[in-house]
Length: 116
Length: 110
Image (cartoon, rainbow over all chains, first blue to last red):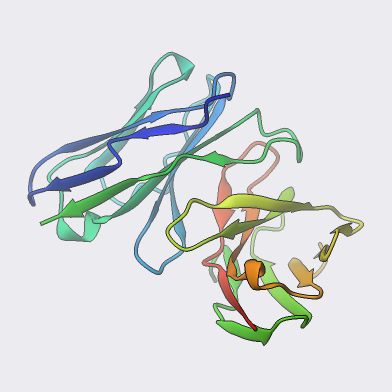
């Protein structure tokens, strides 16, 4: 079946502009995660949605970052007034409800964001 | 203290070697533990879950020590194709988010 789909795959934007990144999770996956990864660095947790629960936003680096998930499916990560330090690969992952070990993360291919 | 810590490496080993990676986590309420593998410029993929009693999958053995909040991954008879970054991953609580370590880079040479 279809995997996690992210768009766009690449985005170049000017400093100060807003960007929207989209994630289509695997159908039936109630858990959705956003991470970002800078070159040569580890994955930095941003935000986590699980079903109808309030999202865990503890990883968002500033109030310029926000995310929503409509209808428990598609998610959009928005970065306002982009800065050069926002340049990274933004990875979305989804999984079945995280009850135990039978719910590994399935990652999309990521959106490579470059802020000039 | 970082939530999930790993030795960044790199580990450079010859084919056939045995190599061990270690990981420590800070949140004692963590419930689930995993090892992921990430190839260069690719997304991470699940390698194996880590069970309390320890578990083995072919050449890979994972162990968990809850008292010490320590996880390990052992790779035996390493292959060139094992070259990648190995990520230690910990779930916060039973329903919480997944926190990734920064990864340990492994390079297996002929």
